[in-house]
Length: 152
Image 1: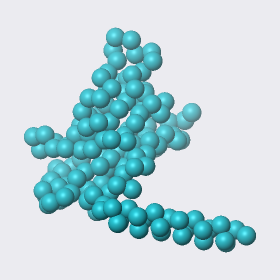
Image 2: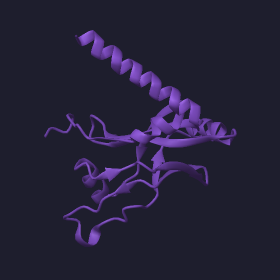
Image 3: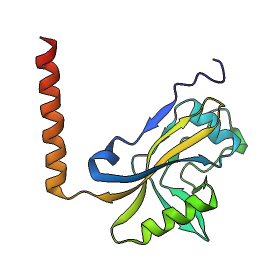
Image 4: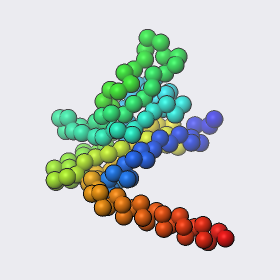
């Protein structure tokens, strides 16, 4: 496979149901050698992952990257915190948004870009209330019914 044609996209399907996205950002991820190899094989899960600040830096917590099969002694810890690479201006902006009540940072998807680097799409988001979740489900059902009607 060519380096620029990657189909690896690991999505957090639960995030759009649980959260309302306010702002989205694309960030690089600081990884070790065996971690990037596992991601390129699609062996990662971000269902329960979120981001938090440590000393002015942003980290992903709860992202599971499976151990690389051929990694032997050099393998990584599957659940370690991974640093996100963003500009200082973006970090400050995200930090201000998170300090507002009820806002959190969730990982929407992890993908390999055209240059072969691992990137994470993160969003500053607010948790949905139960009635918001029901409303979202209703809209999706109506949209699905409309699509079925159009195809006939």
